[in-house]
Figure (cartoon, one colour):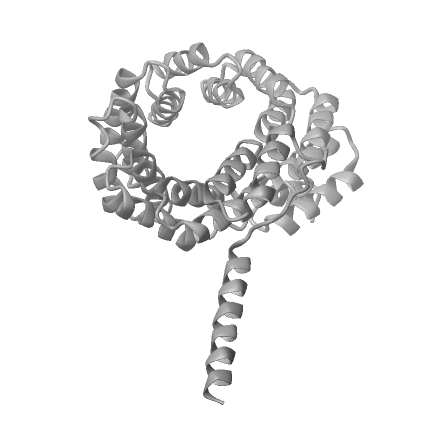
Length: 338
């Protein structure tokens, strides 16, 4: 009787251990499944022979990550961490993956980043990622503490200065933000983001040299739609409409989906009193953003100027449905007698 009880207990323990082991096993991908890339199939072939190898799941998760297949990466990286929770690199990439997903769980990402740093206190990549997360959560002091510790690291100095600048900018300290952005560029003359941030601040400040700052950004990246748009907007504010038009066109050529460059082109056509072209550009804007109130109101204005009051009224009212305080639509309806 005692022997049977001991035997039963041992069988239960073995069963539990077996279930636990199976629970750690991750997703199985057939190595002959051509819907996956060769890299994924090759790693999968190794995983299928060794299904509890944490490193292999990390490698496949990493491959999925760089293919921007973040849901697939998440499955493999969670499996890797469950099999071996002592690998700081796996925790870091898992956190990065979580933050890439549309349903990003900042608490979960933060947990894995903090875990990575507990395992490796000088892990620069994890410090940088955690700093960005802290900035997103407005925990600026924590972010700046980590970032300042990276400024002496040759490989990370420019990024650290960049995010120190962003942290200061978000706190409305533009003077120090500019100092940090310039330090980022001094550390890496090709730091596009720091140059772009500087140009945007200079434009807001109406700095006489703001256009030159945008030119510096464009020299770094001649395919920057945001730089051409930013310079175009500044030119428009300076009443240099033809030059602004050229820069909006460049932004739209680089990125046909640039909503604001498309809309502002419509604005310029209205200023040139080419209402037919303005209507056309409003239509293109609304193809990109169907309920964009300013584009609806501007199209209404174009209709009004061309004598089509019924269609003008419809667009003004649609604009007010999306934005009840839209002044262009309010004034438009008043002009129509409503």
